[in-house]
Length: 113
Length: 113
Image (cartoon, each protein chain N blue to C red):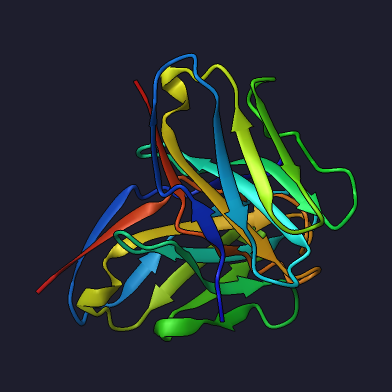
C-alpha cells in the first residue's frame, strides 16, 4: 500500500522567504510527527499530532515554525522568514494509535541560501 | 527529560562478522525503545521495538536487541553482517507508544568485503 509521502522532495529558497512542506500520512494513521535532521545530527522532534487532540508543539525551535493538520490527515509545516540554519531534511512520520511504530516519509531537503 | 546516547559515531566491520551497536537511554520509567535504519537515499525503517515482556526482541533483516534495565541499554546485534547492512542506525526512546520520541545521533555502519 501507499506509504508516507512528502512534497516537495527538495526546496531551495532565499533567506527571509516563507516555505511550506507537505506530508501525506498513511491512511488510517491517527498519529503524525515532524522531525528535522541536520547533517551529522540525529532526528530532532518538532511536533506531534494525535487525532483531534491539541498538538504537542514542544519541539518547535522558534515561533517562525508552525504546523497544522487538516481533517486528521494531511499536514503542512510552515517556516516563516527562513534562516540559513533552517537548512536540513524535514521528515514526517505517521503511526496507528498505540502502535509506536512510525512509518517515515522520504523527507524534504530544504536549502536556505 | 528523556535522552538517547549512541556512543559510536562510526563502526566498520567485515562482511560475515558479528555486529553490536550500543544505545543507552535516560528515562525514569520503563521506556518504549526502537531501532531504525536509514539506508543511503532511503527513508527510516523500523527494525524492531521493545514495549514490555521478553527483553530480547527479534526484528527484521536478522537483527535483534536486548533491553537491559540495570544498564539502561538497548543494544542492537546481528550475528553475521551483510554488505547491504551498511547504513545509518538510530536508536529511539519514547515514554509511551504514541507520544513524542527522542532519537540518538546515529551510528554509521560501514561493511568491508
